[in-house]
Length: 413
Image (cartoon, rainbow, N blue to C red):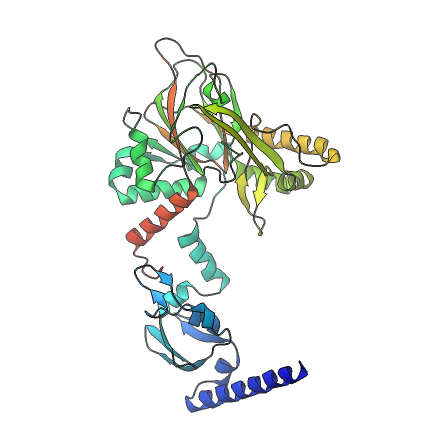
């Protein structure tokens, strides 16, 4: 082992000597070659790019398949200690010749778009990865809930983009003047991608059913909740087309921004926030739909966080919260108190409104809680909604495609 380490050290010395020699021969500053990254001035910014990242992202036809937009570089022979032998820059591009003789060429705007500064990374995240979410309370609802025309979404890429962007940003957006047809919602979904099928079907009908498998299909008060928290891959967005609205008192929708509530609890009730983000809950749905038996279980906290502490998903449904408590007995009472606080704050900061016939209410199902006040049907007026789910993977995918098409983002690929 001692001999091997000495050989590796000698090899490293020779490598450094060769780098210095190459730098001197090509009149490049020594510091450029003695580190493991290349620093360039691009549009007024000094940006650094690791050698290993540059080589891994070579865009030539030997390393990257253009039509598949996929890396085909043979990683079984990849050198993590790869170094440049020569660097040539012109006004718009950078060409690197590596020590093994391979040549890579990069567009400077392409590099800047992928640079490692915090500001540029944030710009990339918001422009391409996911739009920034903006939280709201109920008193702001009329301002943030934008209205969009059904025909414009179907016939205009700009109309589709604007609707999806608002839905992504605020978690809710309304479509108006939808044809009075049970299939009208299909055309909206097809503009995005395809539906998220569940054990309730490709689509679902929301109206009063006495012997139902789901309490949402009753005309009584529907408590605030997120749909299907018992799915590990929970439907991302909910689209509800109002075909027939009740003429009775009641039937108003309730919506609240779970991200706003989470921020409020974190700031004002840190102990309860800890319980709501750490204690797992068992969510369940058991029954039969269209002669298909189901028994769904999933465990997750009410407020799910990523490694940065950002909220990724809200789970909440009193009917779909199972009777098994996965935590210890001493957690039970404090967790119930935190649970009650969460529900109370969602009511306190909720918005109440009533959709009209022809409206499609679209909202983020893993962010917003929704509910409905009780109503009464009669022989001449039976409230009826057609619902469908769409995964956020499909929505974000469509948004990115539209952004490239409409904004001419030619540095994305």
